Image (cartoon, rainbow over all chains, first blue to last red):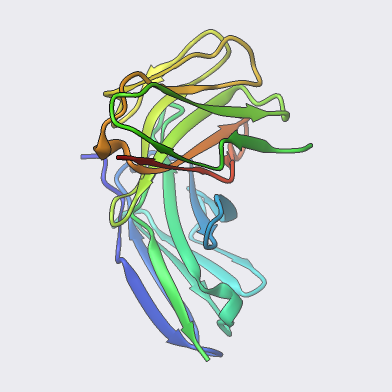
Length: 111
Length: 113
């Protein structure tokens, strides 16, 4: 099927690391994405990784890609209260314009 | 303006009424999309358009129609609204090249009674 799976909730303490996991479906997706949605707003691109990469680091964000297992993760170091949001992973089905989004993981950061 | 605008911001609608959600982008993106967001179900694609003059069905197209008369506008119409169409609707666009990032509008919260 075309399901991109994520756990629905994650709660961490401020200053800890957060790891959000995603399992995607299309092994030939060129790019895989992480989007962030803050309350009452649309989604904004947080970061992306090209499919020939295993890891990408961008300041506090680290994306890991395991193509064999079709597993994508987003690690947020030193998580802050402003990181509280819903995080979506997404892929584009190869040969199409169709994005498939995961169900979203609601991250709650406790002070 | 820069980006995507949607109108209205929110709407309460009686079942059976017709409603058009508006979406305009000024980035000259080729591709545009409509999603609905429901708790626990994430974002589901309703319709999309690869370029002006063409449209395609997404995952949940029933009860919705779209048109793409020009590059900038991509309205979504509910011909006869039903309560199950209560949702938050997001319009998005992408330039379909390179990284192909999707840019999202702020959303329209629709309640059908």
